[in-house]
Image (cartoon, rainbow, N blue to C red; front, side, top):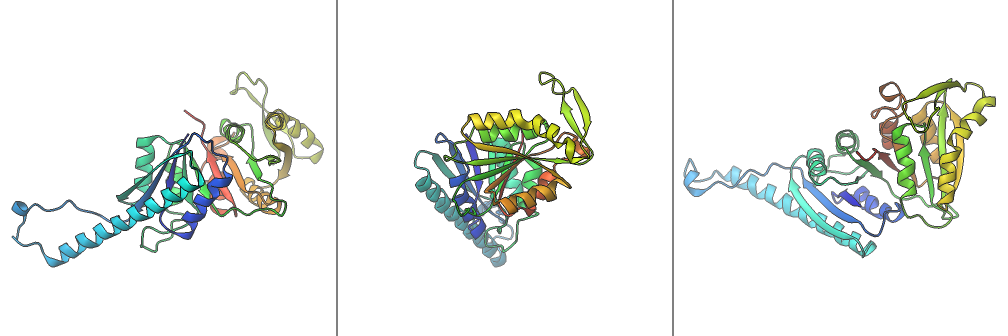
Length: 309
């Protein structure tokens, strides 16, 4: 598994790294820690190219400030990578620092390196810039990269210390991929999972599992029909139980983002898993709607899952 981890030296970035302990990532993992100095670092001017002959003092100072911020970013990435090595001695960990716009640097590295997931803190700052990234860097990365994204927050341990995972499900390809992600991770014993389905008046049902494009709609406006909805997701729940996860199917009515965030808060979830888009695509669970809202509003970590291409 390949993980791209953004670190800017902020408290939230440290919390994101700490949250990796409870993310279930496998022992065979390659991690790249990246820190971005939010500066423009122009190329050095060769002596023969200078005009006028002496470089202006203001330009020289700007060069020095930019170079110092890049060194600071390098130190931040180095410290973060060392922290991860201590947490996961079996991982292959390296670090990198660049001078660029933070969002575009991460997007570009994700396009180049092809990680399975990008991990960011929920908020932070560009290196010594004091600029909050929630709604800018994290959300832009969420929109632009082609892999899954983990918006990580400080773990909130329950009184019984059980790991609790909430998965938003709707029979879409992306939500099914979220279930697969949980199945393929390594979780502590007695980990609890809730599959949460949000209903309104109708719900799409896959009538032929071998042909995912064949769908029908069932009436679910009345709670008396919710058992039918629950049975739709029982096969997924059974797969999770077979993997040793204590799993239940939950049905709620309302706005998906509101219900997912509220359920995670009341239950004390450690992480929410949602697909990047859902069964109605642009009409319903498109990224920018449910997954974006959940990632920005939840009090716990959120993984927005994209199916492997």
